[in-house]
Image (cartoon, rainbow, N blue to C red; front, top):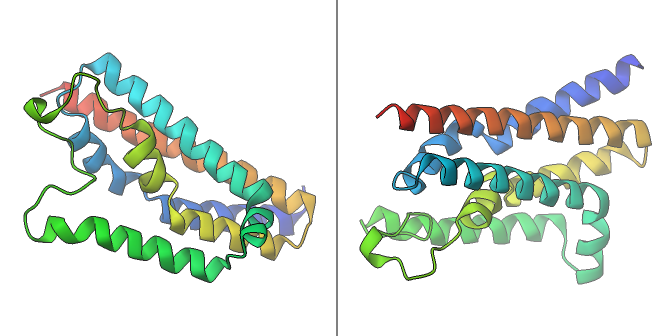
Length: 176
């Protein structure tokens, strides 16, 4: 493999790992799934990571085309994602239950809410920061298929690290 491709793949891996921040998602995942049975927790984990990876790969392959079709720039996408995250976090500052906090058992309806897609896969694992980073990396690749493949491999590796981190968080929770 070409040295430049290897270096760009490694740079993409480190960048994507920092943006996804698997260790930072662990406390949220543990908090959201603390009342779940271990088997259900593992199911939520697997589904969340697979959905997040699918979203990331979709934006790697077709992200620019979709945003271009919609008339949205990468910068506008990043700003709107930041506003969405701010609006979600603001109630938490004042002690109100935010959208990312699990409802209490008595607040849940008869049909359990599946948290694997929202908020775990999107926006926690595969949020606007990751999507903007993927779009930036694909623009830097300039259509070079080897570089795009290196980014795809980096994405898979990042989500394997995320799965391992979250799984260890589940195992730690089972100890208590």
